[in-house]
Image: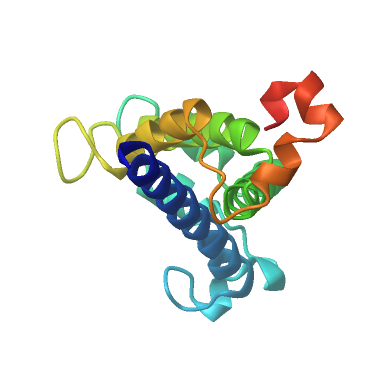
Amino acid sequence: MKGNKQELIWSILRLVLGWILLWAFLDKLFGLSFNTAKDKSWIIGVSPTSGFLEFGTHGPFASIYKSLAGNVLIDWIFMIGILLIGLALIIGIFVRIASLGGALLMILMFLALIPPDHNPIIDEHIIYLIIFIGLFYFNSDRFSFGKYWAKTKLVKKYPILE
């Protein structure tokens, strides 16, 4: 029974973290007025990263991040990244690769905000990072296509694709 509860918790964490990233993508793409106003959406040509990179960053690496604000390549990498990571977590395939990408994204976002705004050491990016690391090592395939994906010859040959 203990294993089933752990599997359930990791499955729920995978799904909700996937939804957080997928929602961020949709909100930035269409300006759904949660964090992104309609007149600031990517679909009408506004950079999805410029606001955060230009005005939200602080600390020792802020000048590096500010220099990236409005860069089209950075916008595309960020948007495709959060879309693919979110979808992989929700669908339950490529979870290990998505976990690596998500962990890297969280480290980069944490470094943009040193020190964190609400706590001198830890913020939500570190919590998400820990979850991504956990998903890399313990991916639960409950509520996903992961069971079927893991049985393919490709994944058996290259387990990192799980």
